[in-house]
Length: 146
Figure 1 (cartoon, helix red, strand yellow):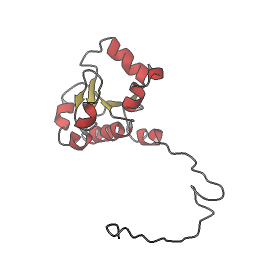
Figure 2 (cartoon, helix red, strand yellow; figure 1 turned 90 degrees about the horizontal axis):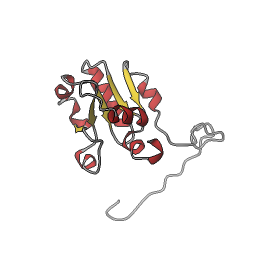
Figure 3 (cartoon, rainbow, N blue to C red; figure 1 turned 90 degrees about the vertical axis):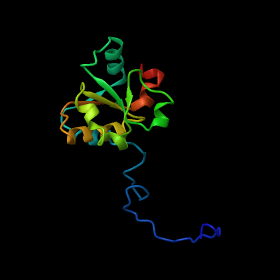
Figure 4 (cartoon, rainbow, N blue to C red; figure 1 turned 180 degrees about the vertical axis):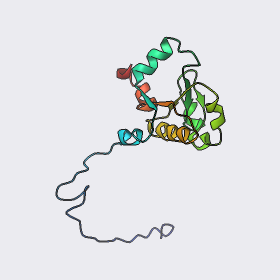
């Protein structure tokens, strides 16, 4: 149907108890439930932009933390935190040995969602101390976050 530029309309009744479009919606905005995801990862350290900047500005030794950017390579080259290495999330399980034998990893992504997944992968691989940048690169690049 798509190649022929045809479509079909489906009619359905609105459910009045729907959480999005019902008479009294409970979901009125899009958001990531980061706090729910983070609660399942014991030992997770969530860094604010200010905390991470302070550590890096103070010259945190490489034994204290290791920045792992889990974005795809084309995202990484558009800008990243100095000193971060790029291990895309899709490669992390296969390359976890690069992370296990180093300082506790601090995972970074665009918004903080993929970095939480990276923390879960690290936990499953036996790394009990990992962290992530809350809000990701979007927060890092926001002037007010400094």
